[in-house]
Image (cartoon, rainbow, N blue to C red; front, side, top):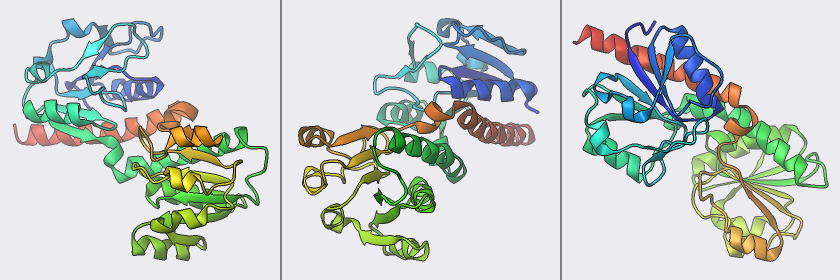
Length: 299
């Protein structure tokens, strides 16, 4: 239980509702900022304006998955009011206050560092990323079906990257009957791709591997699907870029060539917000309990 722990949930989308539900069940003292348009009421949680929130009372702050914008603005789907997170405001929180976010950026890194507050990036954790790969794969399948006029079965698919998402995508498309090639940089990944029964290749050979590709699925957050790579693809190729913004594809050149290229970060929150929210809620609750227990043992 998190009885007595004071937590602010600031902004967010439908995934945040599962986090709120979980934390109220655990008896945390929860303040909701940016939820005034939400009709649903959670027993044990109160809605407040950001200006009325007292940062000196907070043990933890839960931000939306994107964290903040590069200008410090927090996404508030259930509110029309802007919320701006600043170093000055964070500095007013207790020194033990922990900030939880899905991902971070240079702005959020800077203000938490300057305020000397701990920032936890949930999507950097293996457990969150692996669980999230499940709805990500389902969303990728949905997009592939919607934007092609051929079956996934029998199609030539290139997956770029063998991280936590890339491995799940490659495995599932293989089981759906695709002929899957996987591009990677590291020799141990090439070995793992081979062990999975898929066709491996090094990323520096990507141009040679796309001459007959039907679907390219990129998971690498760097420009890898360049203009020279796209120039070698058939005109019917579909590119699905799962990397975080701005993705790893030259979208301008893809459009010029008439190749459909879709940037699709954050698929779990789009195709399965309830499941994605439960994943985050479970992990956040565990981390909060560990922090709370440690602080009680070492006051």
